Length: 170
Image (cartoon, rainbow, N blue to C red; front, side, top):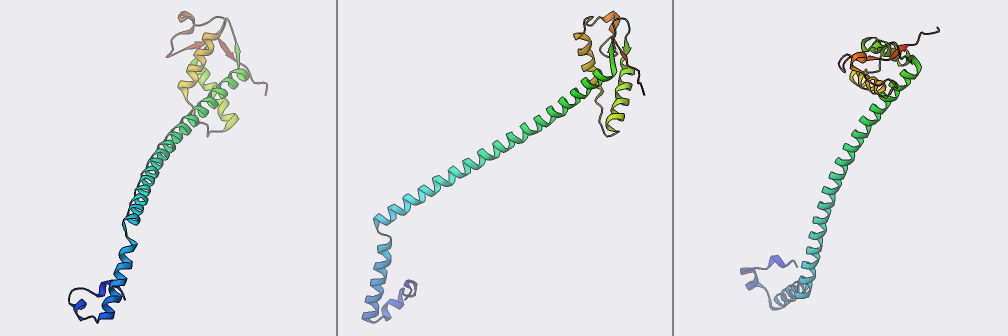
């Protein structure tokens, strides 16, 4: 019989053998929770709580690592995109420009040529970053044998580069 049935007035109504049976059942129940068992249960409970805390710490660490990896992934994507853009600018310079010690070409003409080249080579879907093109052309000019001379090459805002645009043979 369940232990909870017997309480208060119910215990007084039990016959002697039923009462003895109930006492034996209670004793068995209490034995389940003797001192040693309780200590083991407490230890197991503490171990589980430590493990739960460790799991929470691990999860937080994984969230932080995931966030860091996402940020690194975004940085690498931006870097790859930037590298691809620079590679396109270098390719355009190689294929379409010719170094000239005597002539300069204005940035507006060069950006027009670059835009036309992008449209022909890749269609209108390519996004143009004028500032990157300008920076790359200025670096190109600085690395040339003539270098950068304000009197010849103008300003960074409106540079003139010692190149000519190659004529198409088409």
